[in-house]
Image (cartoon, rainbow, N blue to C red):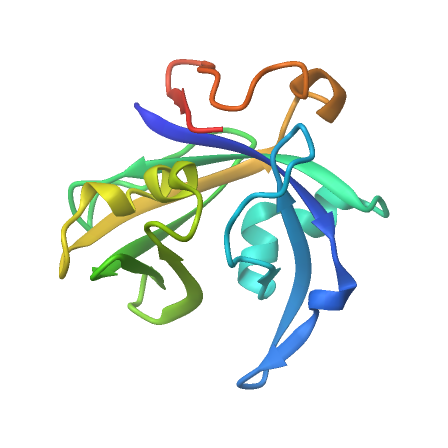
Length: 174
């Protein structure tokens, strides 16, 4: 099965902690493995996002953790759930309005995550599939996340954007 892969370093950032609409968000700075910041408005996760990324468990008292993120584009909402041993997987959709795409939970509830073509890094917009759909369209996907097996020092030796394969399902959008 083909996926689009990002490997990101998530560094805890308490200054971005907040509560919105009675929902607690925990702050993180997403970075490329070579410690350059990822140009995106995403700076905090609710408990569902933290669980998907496994941040509490992966950090285990540390300030940062390298996470492999896979996006599996689907043909429709009812497609079989992607299963990969060792990965947490959740189903989402991205709905495009103009150059923006909002991520929605399986039940249709919108998340606070909105990506914008031309504002957020192209690699992130490509990874989520925002550039694959037109204004008014929706794309369903399974998102899989697990701590990376590579250390940030090893990963930093590879240029951002380098292609990598993990098993038979990865296409890198680092």
